Image (tube, rainbow, N blue to C red):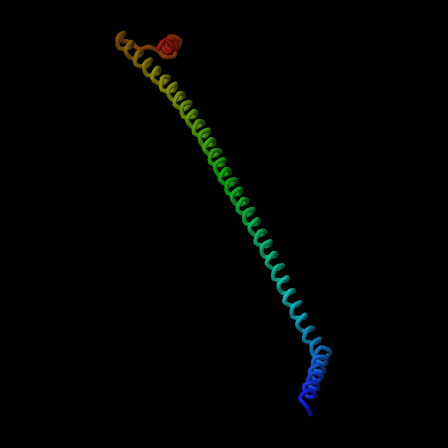
Length: 156
């Protein structure tokens, strides 16, 4: 066989191999590569979607945290205001009670002062009667002279 025939047969065998490869070998490889590319694309899309969902979830969490902080701050401020209000109410009640106690003490002191003056008047009247009795050296009847003693009390 000549070199030309060998070269020609090799070319035909090569073409048959190429045709066989393109017909039977290449489609499953191409299909596998396409499926792999689709899986990779789907995985990348899922990763992007998950990344977007994570960012969205982080944003919602941050919003919830801000809302929670604001609510907590608001509740603390309300509690502090209520505490101050309770303290002020207690102070005002205590001041009112103290004023009532002071007024009652003043009234009691005034009553005691009046009673003390009355007692002092009676003692002075009794001393005056005793003094007059000793000056006159005779007994003065308190029952008979009650009107005189009453006028003496009022003058004192």
